[in-house]
Length: 343
Length: 267
Image (cartoon, rainbow over all chains, first blue to last red; front, side):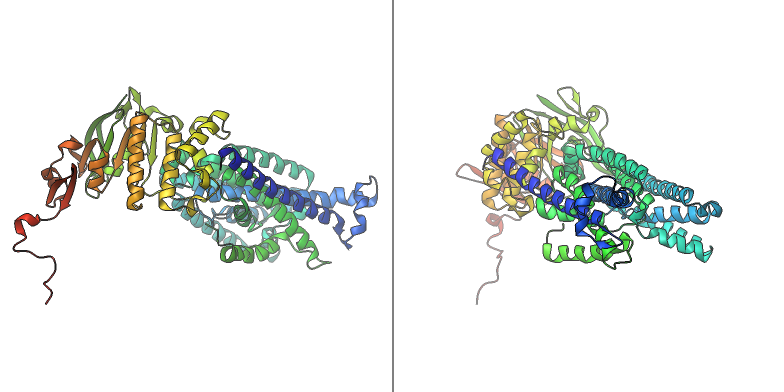
């Protein structure tokens, strides 16, 4: 086979996977937009394209931001997951491996319990202060891990251990706060941890979009460095990768993606872990396609999961974080046992 | 083209791993690096590759100081094949592409693709292009890794035990290919070998390393059994048959065969 033919076949396989994901994404988007408190209204499909009706207003104000939120958060988590797995050379790495989520949870609990309990009554200000605090502690955790990592040569194992240690520290901090606060505040902090996409608003979506584009640009231009890292640090260096700097930069951007998603929407587990593995099964581990397609697959998965979360126990709806963990765990085990290719 | 290693000294926790090493090598030379385990063979190669820290002017190639080069520029000068490289789940095509990334980064040019095509023809990798590295046999995988290393168009090629997992046929093919390429492309090749037989037949020069020091730096032709005995602390003898030199480790049968038998006599 000639190189040209191999390129053609590779491009075909990648395009097919991307096409499948995009189609699936549109199907989930359509389902999300026609589903609401009345259940799934297939007859609403054509009304979606009419301006000025009542459905249009509901879609624009509630369902569309929520669906776009699902796509963007899923894409951020997928991107973060693929970067973590690549840079730490560990298939179990996910946006939450480095304790980012525990740190966010601590930050949110701190804001809810300690930062002027009075502002918690004001929905807008409380949401903003909680998100900021969660984001701040997540990034603080990431910077601490990188600082510790630099002391020990940035080896993947040390970074993961530092993440586990810091995660545990932040988790105990959260429990400490919860233990000494009122039941209402404790319940509020607990409720925050259930990832919920109903908090999506357009300004938040813009913020997520900008973060995503920035991170995608940085990660994608470095796709070959992830491939080189697959051979080990020494071989990667000899292919032209400044391994330590690359690892720091990627951990920062990967943590940024997770921190932004978690700060606004709470913990949404397993998307970052499962999305890259699903794409790997289809197209292998070359990061030139794995990075954008993992993001896409994360977005589609979360959009689908959010629709299921709203419709599973209709008329009541579940926070999507509970569902992703509930479905994600068996999905990962299935891939592990029957896919046989998680490496 | 001259590679010059000057006064290379490396300690870890007060243990001297390389003790003031000096080497000069010319284009077209295949240098066999031999020595017992822990002698510092891999450490030496990693220093030349710039993976381990280098002092100013310790390793230079025609006045270019390796300690001053960025990883991407260094990758254009030196290609290094590690002894214990992991195998990611990427295809042969993608592994070959990595050899050109130091030049073109994320987007390969038409020239890169042409070079890829030539390499595929040279190493007969056409049938393997879409296969994943992990599904290849040891020999095929090593061939791909060498091809990828050569796509970096290096001037110095460093191979750390490249044949340790290969069968005899693949070992010979690999070593012949390395020798041929070194001469054709005027490379400077360092190759760590444990099999002295191969070192004798496929290298032009031998660096004998023991406890971080160069014990002998000789032309392969001038190897003597006493050097090997000193290097490995075992008895060794060299035998010549049909123009080929063979090494035998252990006692000499010629001297002791009357008093000594390997197997008990069958009763």
